[in-house]
Amino acid sequence: MSEPTGPTPDCCAGGSHPPSHSQGSPACCSAVWFLSAGAVALLYALDQATKLWTAGLDVAWLPKIEQHLPLGGHFAVIPNYFDWVHFSNTGAAFGILQDSNKFFIGLSIAAVCGLGWALKKSIFPGRLNFVALLLLLSGVLGNFTDRLAHGYVVDFLFFDLGFAPFNPWPAFNVADSCICVAVALLLTASFLEMKDARAASRREKGA
Figure (tube, helix red, strand yellow):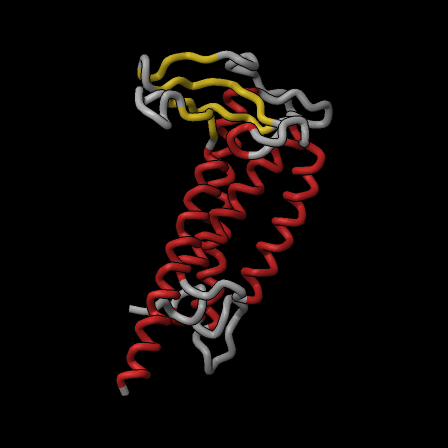
């Protein structure tokens, strides 16, 4: 089956912006946006709550939050397999481009603007793409907040499953998970679109 032409459910099939009456129910489209915003807020809150519990917060103009793990600290959740840690990352995924916090702050601002524009204009149609963009937005906002509040991204999930490449896997966080799942969904959506295009081409040739 092919993906629907719009990123939102059928009631908003005309695009991610509020549809006209001919495209679907405005109330339905408003509900989709409300639920989407709620999903982004929930994932963002989960990301920040876990990081604030780990690293605390000591910013002059905000309430102070107690730190539960010093930087570099860890404790075993599942001994030999899963540790809760407090690691810093001033670069990108897997620790590349370290000491580039200001660069990634700027890149995050550009990414948030780009994602908002893509969602509004339905640049990437289909439900998988829509969900992927929401996950990307959650992840980018989460790590962007870290860079502003702490001066680095807080990584706290650390797994060592005893076999490559998970021995150990680099520490990560909820925002990183959102971004990785989003990339997987975008790749899946792209594969399905190419598959549908090839099938349509074969049907045209056989007609």
